[in-house]
Amino acid sequence: MTSSGPSDATPARRFVRTLREDVSSGLEHIVFSRLVGSALMPRTARRLLLVAAGAAVESGPGGGFTLVGSPKNLTIGHSAYLNRSVFIEALAPVGIGRDSALGMEVMIVTSHHELSSAGAWSPRSTGRPVVIGERVWIGARATILPGAVIEDDVVVAAGAVVAGRLRSHGLYAGVPAKRIRDLAPAAGEGADVATGTATSTEPSAPR
Image 1 (cartoon, rainbow, N blue to C red):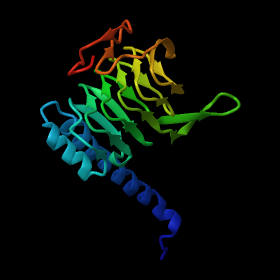
Image 2: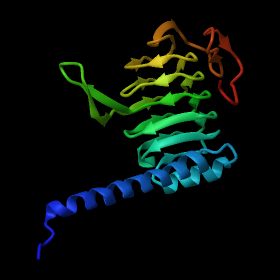
Image 3: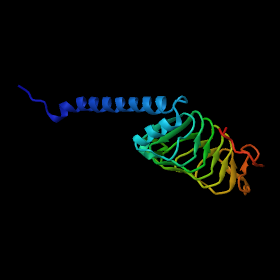
Image 4: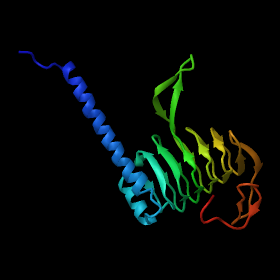
């Protein structure tokens, strides 16, 4: 009679662990991508579900968005607005400051794969936090890369790719995003994402 040793149980344990991870990931996707991310979800209900899951959300964050990763890594300040189809990968902390606005299909990425000296990528990902300050306006389809810091009162043009630190009171555009002009609008004014010219109106749903 032979007995099952630890090595014999390893494949079964791996299967159970993988199954548990897949089920957990699937449920997370259903809740945070389909339910919470639905544009039909009332803002108050969206906030309550996110807070119940561990996120620090001060007010309902606007339109539907997709959240991947732990809600505990997500912080959204008061009156921040996320337009439709915003994608947030919260494998590392993501902070969005008060009165900031993210346009349609903005993507925030926190996962990073290291490269070896030979240039080969590592399959193991590491997380780098993303910080978005207060009164920041990010145009449609901009991409925020791991480790990016966007200081207060910054405008990021549509389609820009943000890496590193963006200093306050500036309009940034391009791939990678570069400062193209200084912004010092008067109280109550904003800046046009495309031109950087001052405007007196604030968008209810940023593009």
